[in-house]
Image 1: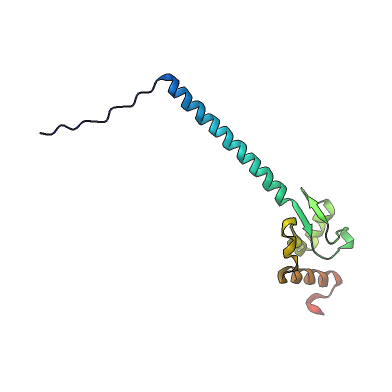
Image 2: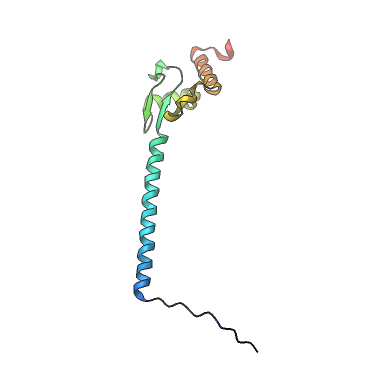
Length: 121
């Protein structure tokens, strides 16, 4: 008959346990701090927008205006009246893409709507 040895439990002293707990707590604090920094960066990046649509004089919204953190009341009202304007607010970093066909089409569509020329009439 063969004898099988069972694994012996690993015994740790109090100091080892305290060190492990302290290390885990420190790691959690560092991770939380890193997450907060990442969230702040995301907020800053997401809220720096430039308006690349046509000027809307009724709401004092000018082409190439830059907005940080939030849109003022007049811009919010312009977005309510002309929902297409919201698509013409882009991240400042994406400014080079403003000349692609998608944004040109949005620009022209909104410009025609502002002039009252719906469907090119």
